[in-house]
Every structure is written in C-alpha cells, then in structure tokens.
Image (cartoon, rainbow, N blue to C red; front, side, top):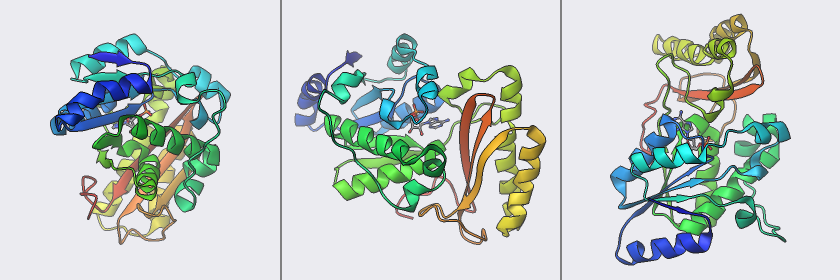
Length: 290
Ligand code: AMP
C-alpha cells in the first residue's frame, strides 16, 4: 500500500492502472478509521481493481474551531487498518496541498438540501467546505466510483447533487450505516464520549428504532412519530439540536410517513455532537434509480 501526499503523485500512481482499463474506487474520509469506513473500503474493493482511501481533516467544513482541534488524528493506525482492508493507495495531503496560497474557489450547493438540518445547525459554510473538498478529491483521483455512508445522509445528497451539476464522471455509491452492537452508529467522534455520555447517546438509535417500529405497525402521522421519538430523547437528557422528518430526496419537512421519510437527529452528548438517521418506509438499500 502506498501513502501519497500530493495530487501529482496520486495522478501518477493512477495513470498506469487507468490506462490498462482498471476501475478505480475512492473512499473519502477524515481518518480516525473505524468499521464504518472499512465497510466502504470493502464495498469499493468488491467493485474496483484499485482502491484509494483519502484521509484529510478538511478545515473548511468545520464551523467550530474547537471541534476541528479536537478531531482525532490517528494516521499510523489508519494506515494499518487501510492496508488490512485492502486499500491500494492512501491519499493523505496536508492543508497546503489542498488549499495552497492564493486558493480562492468554493463549490456551493444551494437550496433546501444545504439550508436545512446540518446546514441550519452548523451554518452554510459546512456544506460549502464539504462540496469543495469532495469535488477537489474527486478531480484529483477521477475515480470511477466513490463510496459514501448513509450515516451522513445529507452529505450524500449534497455530493450527489454536486457531482451531477458539475458533470464529474464518478458514480456515487451510498453505503449502509454500521452500528455498534448497542445500536450507536459508528463515528470517529464516539472516541471522545465519556462512559456516561455514551450511555446517554444510545437514546439516539433508540429513538430512531422507536419511530421505525411505529411506522412498521402502521403509524403514519409525523406528529405522533415525533412524540414517540421525543419521549425517548427527553428521558435521556441529551441536548437535542434537531429531530426532523423530511423527504429523503429534497429534505423538506413532511407531515405524514405515507411515503418514505428520512428521520434525522442531531444531539450533543457532553461536548460531542452526534448525528444519525433512519429511512422510514423504504428499504434503505434501495438502488439509487428507484
Ligand atoms: P468521515 O471520516 O466521518 O468524514 O466519514 C467518511 C465516510 O465514512 C463518509 O462517507 C461517512 O458517511 C462514512 N461513515 C461514517 N460513519 C459511518 C458508519 N457508521 N457507517 C457507514 N459509513 C460511515
């Protein structure tokens, strides 16, 4: 496995396999790798001859300096995990490689998909940072396919919109959310949870399970579903930022779950901000064209 630091090295390394017709799969990450990331690597491994994993803690998508400073950086362990999962190339540029002196371009996806949920909570700069860095990473590697987790459902939508709008010739492949045995969605931020906060954080998957169960048993009123989730969250003492029931494609609020609905939660457990979601009323592994 190679570890490359510059776009130039990355392009050089990919030139030969690409000329030979090898498919390239890319998994963009911010490092502190866990099984969730590795599941994306496995999906990429299954479909491509060459797998590139990028590790870049992108400063422009952080809207809180403290969050950026506290973000875990574990490159050595990451490299070992990436190698064992079958990654061929780790692309780990520094900030100056991605944003050299004089850098002045922002990719900004506009409209409800960036204004609501995370966009409302963290500010529009967050998704500008995401769209900009993902477009730069995809243009650096020009992969045939890139793999993103449904855990960040809104990010996935933003990336899909951006790739379609800019005509980037990469297929975006959504991958399911991996969870710990207790239901908590795997996240690099979980490492910062105290034991008590982690126990509190379990209310997030429990609330999502409660609404899923309610929909399965025939409840379609969002007010009733919100009340079900609310009971679980209030009991937990989490600081809930949003509990949203939205159209999974437009992220606009909905009043009923007669059609598929994305239920998304953001909450703070201690100093750690967590997000999670579940798709109600549709097989989450639906194909994109469905
Ligand atoms: P991050 O390093 O947090 O920026 O995440 C990199 C990629 O891994 C994104 O596409 C995430 O959606 C995905 N990811 C993060 N956590 C999980 C998880 N628990 N299950 C599946 N994918 C995940």
